[in-house]
Length: 440
Image 1 (spheres, rainbow, N blue to C red):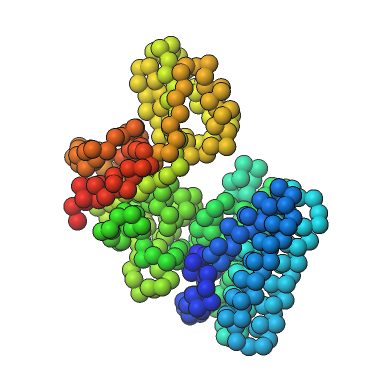
Image 2 (image 1 turned 135 degrees about the vertical axis):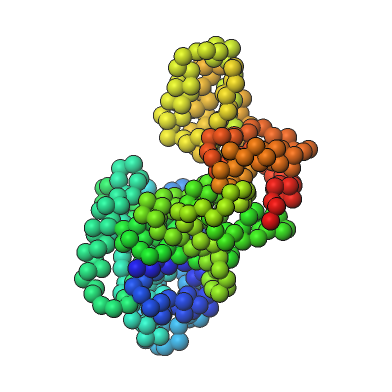
């Protein structure tokens, strides 16, 4: 089994959806294709939900109509036959009728999740109609029939595997092609839910694990993972090979090409993940496997929107249970911590989830003096066993001369050295690191 996931930019224009059709039409093996919503759709649906939540029905109606118009133009450029266009128009009308009905009823979070699910359902249905028009035999799968999460929002891999196997067994044949949605799922209440932003990568990896696939391919608009952020660094190069651990570090700390959670399911079953370019399918891209090709620094990633919190207290010195009290506050508000550094009288942590920041600070204040620094960026330098190489830290610090470093994390992972800097100097820091730490 081969899993092929295509992101929003890969299906965001009619001509690109045609390219995807060409890529999946003759794979020569059983293939499950996972599609994201058309680029821009999830943002538009989010804005519709926000307008409805604020009871601004006029604004919600304007946004629904604008998105509807986009899809009406899209399908006419996508399809040629009268029959195909009729089917597409019917699909689009059904989904936007649902959105318009929401203008007349009370809004709640469950309805908002239903709104967000419309993007993937629309993209896969339109793609399936295109396959039918081009006489490409395929089977349409509804992800809501097999993808599920538990009460903690964690995927139920065993249940997913069992349900999916049953569905696939009902569609017996040779070189079968299946089309399904990324991102969407059912929750423990059997309601429509999702795997959060970037969740289509997660869907693909979960399906790969559930089917014990030969490979999980993530197709985007860039030829693999680069050794630095190509948006802000001039000279970057794609990385041919990464280990699962290296890729997980890079994804978590800002490499946008891959959803952070998508590594774990593939790693559990040692399923290779390939990062490929829809617009340049001949490019080798990046392959992520269990094996480690070589030691040394492989890549740098940056994560923005970081807030640093420092708790300083002379009572902390040798105080039993102090850190436990700090961590319990973050646990109470379900706020993950990215970095942590400690000294004899202070502890500093970083977070990127700010919805409960005021409550967290209020509960930390009895423990000591609390300082909050916003507008920070974590820069993560990743490579196999670099924390055990005495030269890596030296080269990182040498490269960062002139850049004020707020925090440094070294040794928490064998594959990662992380620094926290003000976001205003992030671009300068990335470029200096690019020149200072790579020897290839």
